[in-house]
Length: 186
Image (cartoon, rainbow, N blue to C red; front, side):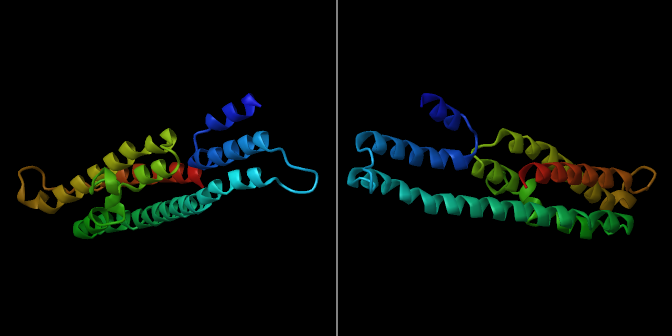
């Protein structure tokens, strides 16, 4: 039925993009050579064989998505360490976490390394996932900037007070956005 195919093609996930050709080949094969009472016709079977090539790609896609989600979980756990480092005025320690993979993948190493963008692509350019990219990247970049500024605060004009609340607030924003994203994709 046309309605069935239309419903499947409008679904956004990469899973459905991969499974659609399989369904279309199976449907076309059934129309060309309807199955006999006892067996699947040779033409129908031959029509399904090329679609079997999709399954390794589908399995690899699922593994990629799992690995990307696992990386996001690791990043989220890494962010839990930063407020304590900030409280201890360990600016270099906080920046080390922020500036190195996997955390840096979200804001400092370019779009091709961004775990959220990769996850969105693995999910068929999932717009809901892509929307988290800028919020998380911006919060992490600001947290790093505040920590960087604090390294030099004692040598700069002004009151000489390190900013503690501001970088912690930015880390809190990044954590909240990652929690929201993980809730969406898990």
